[in-house]
Length: 225
Image (cartoon, rainbow, N blue to C red; front, side, top):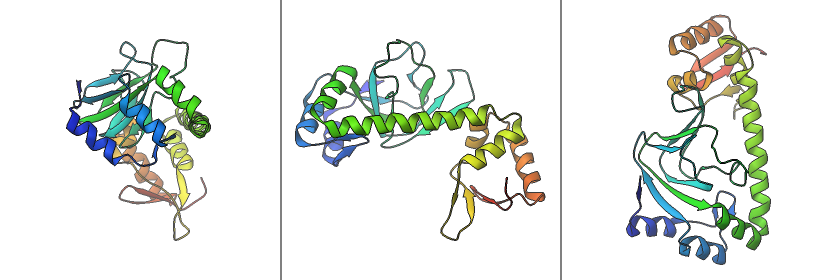
C-alpha cells in the first residue's frame, strides 16, 4: 500500500463528474473531499489485502481504478462479489458500532482507491441531503444483494445453487429471451463455491436436458426453472 502521487490524484480529481456513486459532487462537496487531509488516496498492489478481519478502517472506499474481490475470509475461495472502477465498499459498515470487518477485500489487479472516513462522510451527509437519500438507497440495494447471495448459499447442493444463481440473475434481452450472463466459468465456480469440473458437468447436463443453452458467458433459459 502506498499513497498516490499528486499527478495521479489530480488526474482523478479532474475526471470526477457530478457524482461519485451516491455522493452528489456539488462544488462545496467536491472541494471538501479534495481539500480535506482526512481523505486518503491509496494504491494497492495485486493480491494485497485492502480490508480484512484484522485490517479495517472506518472509511468508505471508492475504487478509482482496478478490480477488487470480496470473499468470506482470507483463506476462503467463496467469492461474495467482484468490484471494479467506480464501485464502492465499506458503506454498510461505515457507521457500525463494531470494529471488525466481516469479510476480506483483496486487490485482484493494481488498484487505486479513495477512502473517505466516517467523520468526513458525516459532514458530506449533513451538507448534502441528496447524498444522504442516495446513501440510504445504496444501503437498501446492498441488503437486497446480500439476501440474494444468502438464497444461493442456502439453496442446497451444487445443482440447486447453480439453478438459484441462474434464477436470481436472469433478465429478458432485446430479443425477448431469458438470459443470465456476466461471469467467466472460473468466477462463477468461485461465486457458487463449486469446483470448475463440477460446474461444467452440471451446466452440460442442464443443456442436454434442454433447460439451458450456453453461448460464451451467456446462459439462455429454455425451460421454466
